[in-house]
Length: 428
Ligand code: EPU
Image (cartoon, rainbow, N blue to C red):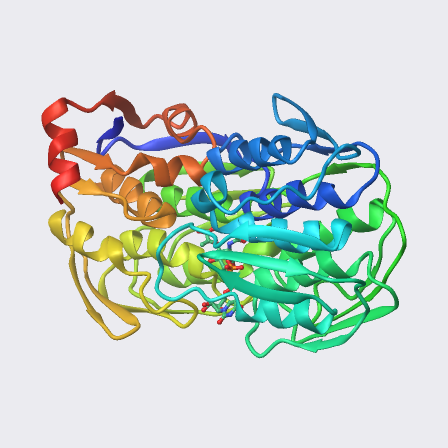
């Protein structure tokens, strides 16, 4: 097992290229199940979530070729193999196998998904959608059993705006009989990306990216080629890196429109941010000012950038308040930031940050993916060396993080953990 070592305080400069979007990739790959002939997805990120989904498609009989960042899936020999345990438990997005397998085979058995622990993460809205389409859904010993004689289009109002439920219902509905209408749908760019792939496969979808999506079911879907959108959360993370430790960082392969809420907040803090068609330049701030943030569904401020931004706010003058309205317990990084000398307290769904504080290097643990990003940013800002464990979380979502940061002039490396350190980790 490895840990990440970061020597803080080095000024960062240069260009970093953003990879394909993790939260699109984890839906696009299961979506290939719905086709009858090979589908190619170009520009996938090199992350462990993608690797696990590739293995799962092979487990159900798919033929998958994956080289560099492009994956071709031949789904023609797939069968609805039950996947109650094993790799499905490793990532939250394995729930997309439910919608895709139900859509193609009218049956599926999928273990309840894992993923980052951010407080309660129910899937009741996904199930409500599947049932409305005519599926019988039962939970037996930690696995979800789905079965339908036939899927029929329905009008589904989501009680909670959910990215996962919106995509999952689209996956199940594209081959259902008749029209499905999803009301109060989520509007994230990843939903448009999945709808684009499905449309290229022959599906009939209108309104993706708005809160009403209309799907007219078709009998069959065919193969196609699709290029994934850039990862707005990875891009946002590097924008924050640029603000935290940069002397001019250019983020390349990004859709700036996807990041308007972060751009506005960084500017409000006094950070210089310039954009063009597919790049964002982040310059240094003379002095950063405290700001308040409330996470909201897209196009509001993304919950996935709340943790990285909290690290940056430790360096801002004044008191900032970060409120997460999406996840009640996405604050596990705060104790670790405190170990690094941050002055932060958590009250209910808010973190209150007093700054500016000079962070100090320390031994810290990433409890989830974006907590990991937050600790890396803190390590870059800190005096001395920071050791980050829990790398398996970071590897789930950040492609070539060490190489990309070193490319900007950071001093960061992976190191094998000693036996004693591994023992200590187990006892925590
Ligand atoms: N919710 C329900 N019932 C449901 C579904 C969701 O109550 O059936 C609640 C959740 O508990 C949460 C809110 O609705 O409070 C929003 O959840 P959503 O379903 O939108 O989240 P998700 O689809 O499970 C995706 C991303 C997350 C990201 C959220 C919010 C993927 C694989 N994950 O999760 O990404 O935080 O949307 O934008 O797309 C990450 O990348 O680090 C990450 C956690």
